Length: 85
Image (cartoon, rainbow, N blue to C red; front, side, top):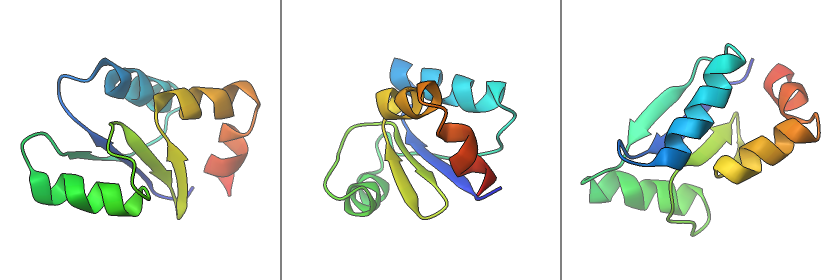
């Protein structure tokens, strides 16, 4: 399974939903809290090609996007394939 990284803030409900889906699937992930950490948020923004909202989710080298993008991948049956790659 490729490494999964999710950039979050502690108060973000979309972050909680994204983490819940990953946990439900048994996926281990690295969580990087960017709240009050401008250097980490800037690094996330660069990695996410300008997207500044959280969560920003990466599976291996692939930028998934945010919570809605993660759920859309799952609904299309593509999330499990990406996680298995």
